[in-house]
Length: 417
Ligand code: NAD
Image (tube, rainbow, N blue to C red; front, side, top):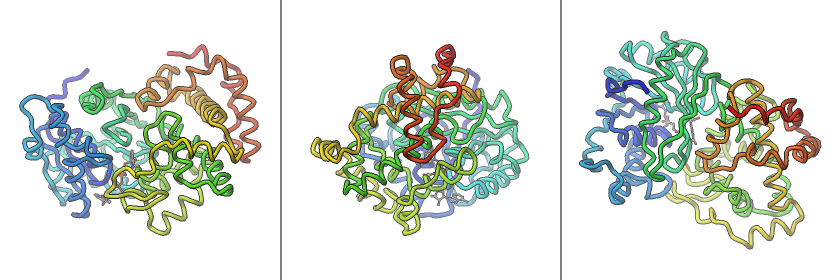
């Protein structure tokens, strides 16, 4: 734990879905001034409304958090909103910032331009963080003039339900900046769960870091499966109900829509280049991005959304599950096996590459995301999963799904810490 009492002014660049969530958390964490900056006034207006009234559902908004008695004593929504400043001019937004976090679209060039400006405009002591989902922190900070102060701080949606924050070291990030960021992330409350955030300290960057790397590799198989299902006449809504049974409250397709299909598309394209060509945006995502149906933010993606809120179809219906099983496509047990096998394999790759020092970190990351960890089920299953991965690679034509050396050796069992 380091002393962060000198960090009073917190600035968020980009007032979209994530910028809004992060600004709200910063308010709840007690920073004296939280400034949001965006190039579009519409984005800022929507962002403030989401902070007050909730993004994913009403329970997430400051008003509901206050009504539920979860604000620190003496605080009210009005008091917190007085600490929230709106500033369209970047120079003004960062002139007295101690900590800046960027949450603009997932575009390396755009982020690099912003970090170059931040390097010139923010006070020399200010830490410059990025909420990028996938991109190298070292590359983002390349022209910042202060690479030792550039760091990744990656949050997840829906933010007030997930307890995970990844803090990522770029090649030049100093120890002091890493320690400060971890302490800041730990200060963020998790009001919805009444639990503390889990901060995954990632000492070596890798495309997609931990969680998005796992999700994007799962998407290799899920995209293939979705294509098969659609050919058999299954709807996106039915598929969503099917996948959400794995444990996440929001189904896979609702989560894509909610995150923003443009953001997903850009992230997958980055991983296609940086990790493996087997990761790619499915034609269903490409079609929607091209037609401007970006998900919750535009009202339509795979599903229909009203005011950015959870679609009615995002509920598990028994009849939906039965109808998928009846097509003979896949049973729930087979789906769980496939997803767990892929997850274990990618977890082993993270261990092989020393992105994580032990699978205990992986278990904690999954638990913070309310997902089961494949490592916990590996003893009884990993030999069967090795065979299954070979089959999945063959069926999908995606060699990246083949089991890696560490998984095949079983030596990962000795790599807990
Ligand atoms: P978004 O599309 O909801 O919002 C992006 C905002 O950035 C928009 O309001 C836009 O007007 C603004 N913007 C664009 N250029 C700008 C500039 N030059 N200066 C200031 N503002 C600018 O995107 P988002 O979903 O909030 O994602 C933002 C970042 O967070 C991306 O890097 C993304 O990968 C990452 N992220 C997203 C999610 C998710 O689920 N959406 C989760 C974790 C991390």
